[in-house]
Image 1 (tube, rainbow, N blue to C red):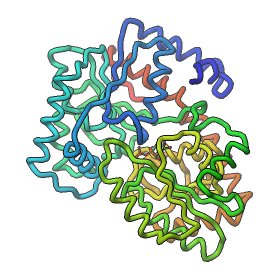
Image 2: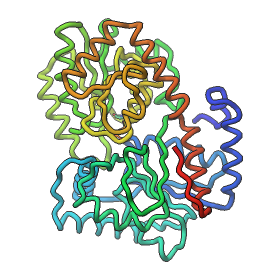
Image 3: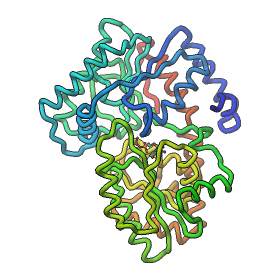
Image 4: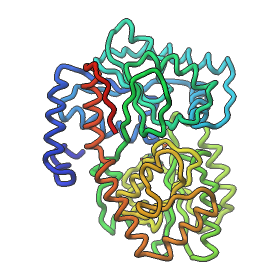
Length: 405
Ligand code: UDP
């Protein structure tokens, strides 16, 4: 794993020096992250890098994952969808499962660090420990809750109010809630296996493993098999593009252990692709180098989500200098200014048109990719994210209200 000094070549010495200074101010304070899955999805992706880096700069940090059965994760998936604004009916029995599992986890998992950092709604019930422990609690919401279903958000809000502060990814995601708020965008790690530079032969090798040719342009969407990522919509767009340009589609995704719907969605996607030899549906184990290589081999990266949190796959594609065609939802709009960092779309037709446009104009595609990479370098690298977290931690011990963008 990359050492903190290695980031100096990308972001400059000053940035790394500042991280060390901030970390020094946190001496004596411990931080505990809690979420619901160790692998799969953007939250785990970030924590896997954030936690070792915090430790390396001297912040005493641990990461715990709550446990839950299938029924618990069925409810949390519904809660996730409802927070994104999708109509979901959660029965009183299902709420009971949610709170009971939360309570059980709280009994089994002591949250004794000075700063407890709860990610998303799944572990939110653990905040019942706060009163007795008198430590600081942050709720990190990775979801765009601006359109959330109020019947689902209200019961959660009772718990959110108990936190010292809530962290959202962007202003548009937040809601008026009676809790201090920080705005902190997610990030990627440029030196991780997912994002580091790869040699051309390494990329070729991975393509070979999956039986994909580099002879035809590759259109790729990397995502968990989730309805909100609209894999079927991606296939529809691909078919429209295919009438004009000979190309192939890669839908690469694993599943997250807290996502029970993925098997069903994958089945639907397989049926919908009807054995088309130019559509590669890759159900992959967590393999960062393979994802990296597929993204690098692509002529266009698509993220046709119907709803999105931040959309780390978009960040990853932009960092690799790829032209990105993505839906104008959630955090994607923070990452892409239309026609400057990539192309935003609102429909299958819009996506198809945009994909054709970049496939048929390599110069334009390169220009978009270059702008996108610079945008990520300035705003969405892990060093910026670390700095924002350190400042947020420090400000928990100060009375004044500071909001970071
Ligand atoms: N990812 C992965 N393998 C997969 C699917 C996704 O490694 O099969 C990674 C992807 O590269 C990204 C993260 O999981 O880093 C997905 O984050 P995003 O914010 O795009 O979506 P989420 O899954 O959190 O909704």
